[in-house]
Amino acid sequence: MRVHLAEQARSELFEIGEWIERDSPTRAASFVEELYDACMRLGDMPNAFARIRSRPESGIRMRVYGNYLISYIVGTRVDVLHIVHGARNYEEILFPPKP
Image (cartoon, rainbow, N blue to C red; front, side, top):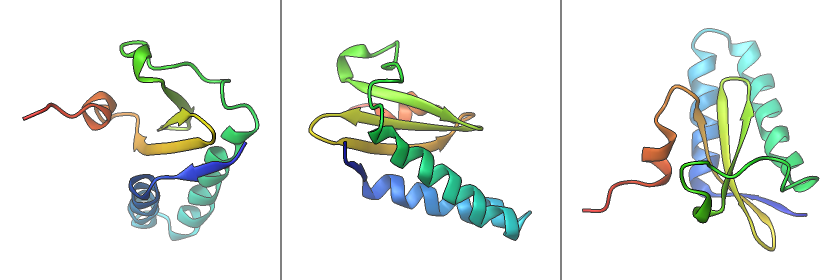
């Protein structure tokens, strides 16, 4: 199945690389590549990872890769929504409070 990274996910991937680069420029590039590959491999088995337990009706699934969480939804393609560090409040990112 085809995989598409949302603009926000692409931006987050870039920011992750910048963050890691502060301590290890060499590792930054290789880790971002690994994280990107983990996203792309979601197309091989899109239903392999569970839906978010607190909101299964959203259809959003979560894959863990190292310390990072890859959130995505499966439709006619796999749409990667966000790539965030596991210490962040992913529910607040995925489901921001309505004004």
